[in-house]
Length: 76
Image 1 (cartoon, helix red, strand yellow):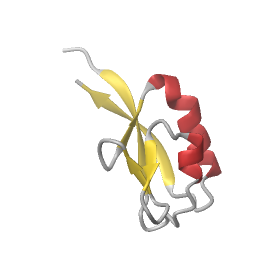
Image 2 (image 1 turned 30 degrees about the horizontal axis):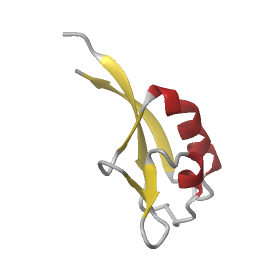
Image 3 (image 1 turned 90 degrees about the horizontal axis):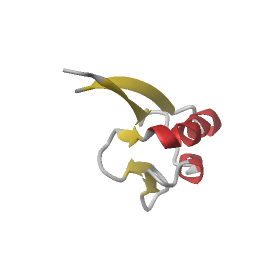
């Protein structure tokens, strides 16, 4: 079985203050709820396609609350 790497954006909800900067950087994958908090279009952990990796890195780097983390995870 071959394994590939998938990028995943994770939000630390204890730190997130709902600034919405992540959505400005990565609007293709992040919606904001009515209070300005991020949510993935599919799941709580937000999968990031390879072609949006730069935008995801920008979302992490510009988060005022330092509440976002980008991780690679193995997928079968």
